[in-house]
Image (cartoon, rainbow, N blue to C red; front, side, top):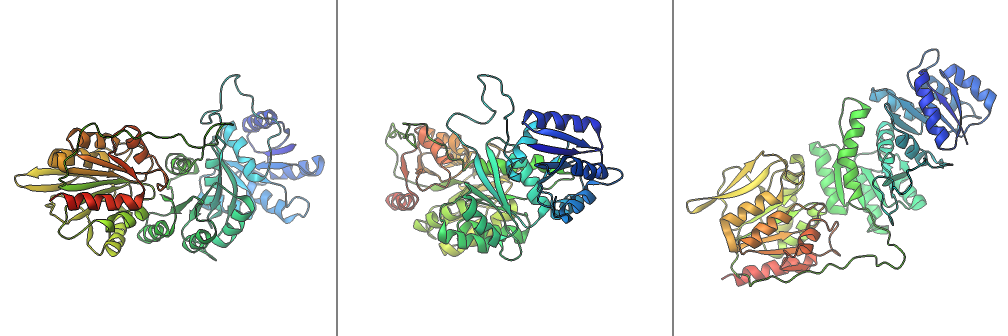
Length: 490
């Protein structure tokens, strides 16, 4: 395996030479594009060329252009390793034929994890400390295979490089539109798809609908700009079968964008990680749900709902089973940004045939109200005399969430006490766990969605394992159960 490192900085060349040497590569070096062309003529066809974009004599952009125009060098994998911060220049390099982008300052892991994305194998793994596992990887787990579909070459490059730097993820390929994405899914069999919303040829929503006809269970995370249009289309995609969404990260530099990808995108992907069972081990660990320690009152004054990943679809099935104009108030925390929740309220209004509204600070909570916590603000309730008042708060996030279900649940437990019915639906994390404990302590009732019908059995799973759920039910029967409890309340 042979690599040509092209960079005008001698220290950078030395560091890259050490990284590639540890990976089993024979390393050659050049200080600019012109030296690189001379080296190519001398050393023959390399397995990889790394290119810095900003160099004297001949910069990386020109080197990429010349290599791709030459029939001998046009197929050589090119990896941009650069401190370039101008997205237009990065996009230009990737569009000209570079296969990936790693931002300076880089790590050995970032370089190593970018190689499979370029179709290269690591001849010799980086030496690891004996007896220690690679961070983030545990025995019996395999990296999550990700396909990135986006029409922007810059986004594909930055996202792929950032994802590949995580040892629990492996970018197995990219596609420029939905039609190519369907072909790549058939070829590569990824574990999960990160899918742009707005693309030419075939957009993300059209591709998703086609994909769901042939692969109804392949996890898909929509990748959208948090604009009004982006939010509306992404919500349509969630209803059409997408498993989750994430906003496209913004930043003033590639390094900042990469950091946002690590903080915001990667956790969304990892929630769909499938654990590979050890030989002789069952695929799932049974969860024993403990029965309530004491009988519950059958009276219900309010229903509070916690939901996250998979929420729009779950709510659209769950709510129509029991909501009514003369029923009890229903208050919902769905983990979503502000730009999404207004569209979600509109959509739920259509399926419920009843108004679903974003809660307003200071409004009176009346029977039959269906209130959704606005994105980015906590929803809580307080009693003022004979009335219950909804209040919105900009207090710090809880469980990394705002709105957080724990905030709503614990204030509901104070207001309605033993007449509180809490429901925890599909979602990542443990939001709702502490709040469910507060409801149970007040004498109220908690129900949880089962694992089989949850997109992610994080939130309801934590509640079930803690023995806080009076019942753990599939989504359909769960709505029926709530309706039965409400009918019995009188």
